[in-house]
Amino acid sequence: MNLDRVIAVRNAKTIYRDGDRCIKVFNENYAKADILNEALNQARIEETGLHIPRILGVSMIEGKWAIISEYIHGKTLSQLMKEDPDNKSKYLNLFVDVQMEIQSKTCPMLNRLKDKMSRKIEQADLDATTRYDLHARLEGMPTHNKVCHGDFWPSNVIISDEGIPYVIDWSHVTQGNASADVARTYLLFWLNGDTEGAGEYLNLFCEKSGTPIQYVQKWMPIVAASQSVKGNEKERELLLSWASVVEYH
Image 1: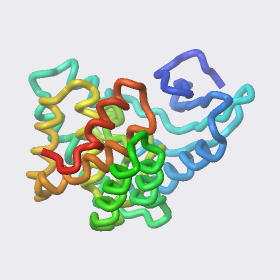
Image 2: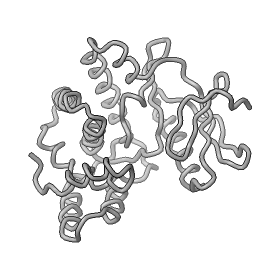
Image 3: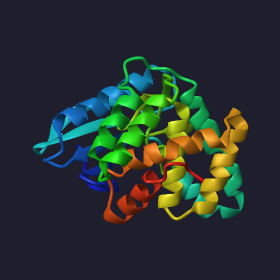
Image 4: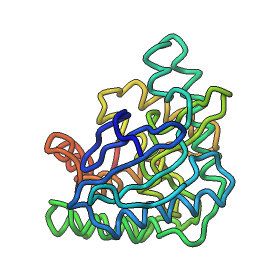
C-alpha cells in the first residue's frame, strides 16, 4: 500500500491516493466506533444507488485505522468554482440538484437527525433557557426520513472525468428533515465567508424544491447550536450567536 501521495489533511485524519484507491487514515486517538460507523454509513448509502465511492475495505495501517474506498478521478465543485468564477451560478444549480437527489432517498438503518441534534444541543455552550428553547423548537419540527448528508459542501462533490457528480465524506449522514441539511449548508457558506453564495444557494434550493425560505430559517438556530460543539473558536462564536437568536430574521 502506497501512502506517498497525500490528497488532503483534515482534523485527525489524512487522505492518500494509491492508484485507483483512496485511503483515509485516522489518528491513533480517533474513536474506533466512529470509524467503523462511518464505513457502515457509507456502505448503507451505496445501497441507495447514489453516485458515491464504493467502500473497498477497513484496515489497520501502522497501528492506525483506515477506510479504503474508490478514488474518483475528477475535480470538486469547489475547484471548478474557483477556476471558473463566471459560471458559479451554473455550478450552484448543479450543487442543489445533487443535494435534492440525495434527499429523494431513504435509508431506514441510518441514525435519526433529531436524536443527533438533541444530543449536540445539550453539549452546546449555551445557557439552560436557550437550550430549553432549542429543544422545544427541535421537538416541534416535522419528523421526516430523508437522507441528509450532514456536511454537504462543494468540496464534497466531485465531478468525474465523465461528468458524473460523486458525493464523498458520509461520516455525518443521518435520516431526517431535508431543510435541516439545507440550513447546515447555508451556514457552511457563511463560515467560509461567502455570504453572497449562501443567499444564492438558499434561494435556488427553495425555488427548485418549493420550500418556503422561512421554513429553512426556522432550522438555523437549531443547526447552529448542534454544529457549535465542534470546530474552531471563531466558528463556534459565530454559530453560538446564530443559536441564541430565538426568531431568525
